[in-house]
Length: 136
Image (cartoon, rainbow, N blue to C red):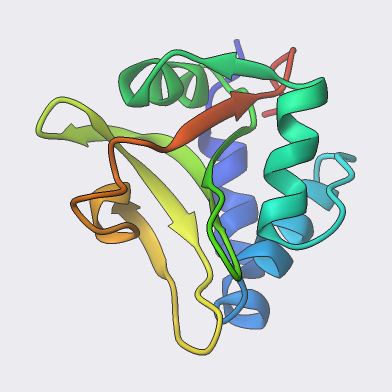
């Protein structure tokens, strides 16, 4: 039965090369599963809304990641939004899943809860989208 360990392994494999670019990091990890993601964070989120299935919330996103689905969390913003790759693991405060992300102009985080990726005003507005079938 698929689980999220392959996604974590792919996240770890791409970490050093892409830890300073959220969309570049997402694209590199997605390629490992033959998933094509194009553009920067805002364009990626717009495309996800058109073609991917949406998870209800953070706990749903975490459950899908645990089942091996490729799950992307994201929030549009100006001038640049932000995207993360949700992975299996314990939720923070019962609602914030674990994820990997790059950070433009800095260094992202590895296997950390997403409440460290967005501020308190934004972390509850994040959308989550997932692959139709498990990938790992």
